[in-house]
Length: 134
Image (cartoon, rainbow, N blue to C red):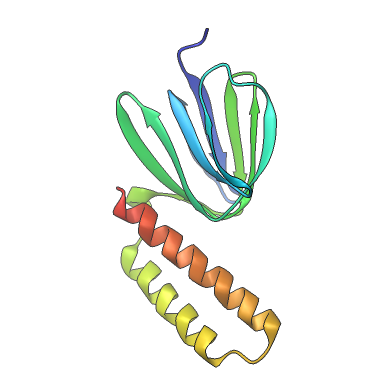
């Protein structure tokens, strides 16, 4: 049995992470899931939230904004709309985005705008939670 697996997180803009890890926990659309070495293959849609992984006895967090995770051949590949390591998150920017989204939600008249503002708020709050775990 393998002792580690490869984690790769990719966005349309860049390769965010490519490392050997011991465990991956991810915010699946149907709930959080975990992956250990030699896991069976599967594909899952991702929700906005915190993906975390354990490597060399430490836990690391990465903000992900939707996308997909594929587990196959002892590798977890995450294709995310956006992703940021906890240490790269600008907490002031996240707080400002949260404030803007809350203001928009207080003034919304159309459902489409409400959904966009709600999604922006979820992203800002998730970034703040992930940054708090750094």
